[in-house]
Image 1 (tube, rainbow, N blue to C red):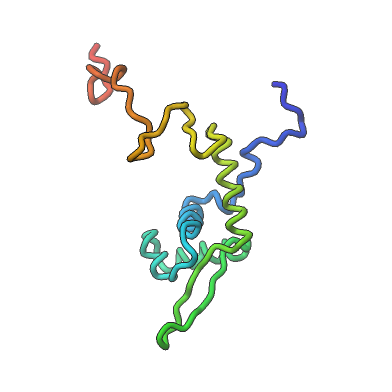
Image 2: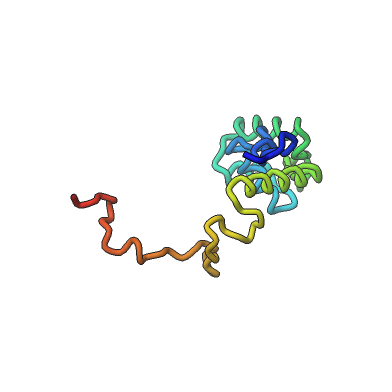
Length: 140
């Protein structure tokens, strides 16, 4: 291998606190919106209140999210948002993840095929799959 010892592997840039599937889902959701009510986030991710609270506490400690209590029509509502530094760190995390899977540019697919315009997926190459048993058996 010709890599110099100073070159950092993309996997080394992955932040473990983000890498948890639940926290990754929380950050991905918050990355698409400005802020969300705790209950709406909990329901959209199908989490329990204690589980979401625990995961948000971890993310808040790492300064990835901000949690605020707001008064809405005499009711206190907890809102969650991705912090500015959290947004930057999440983008860097995604860049590292794409580098690992071989997609330097998020618009490219690792296999080099163009994505389908409607679904964003590559078309299936049926020339190699026609006539093959559906269950994957070889027939021999």
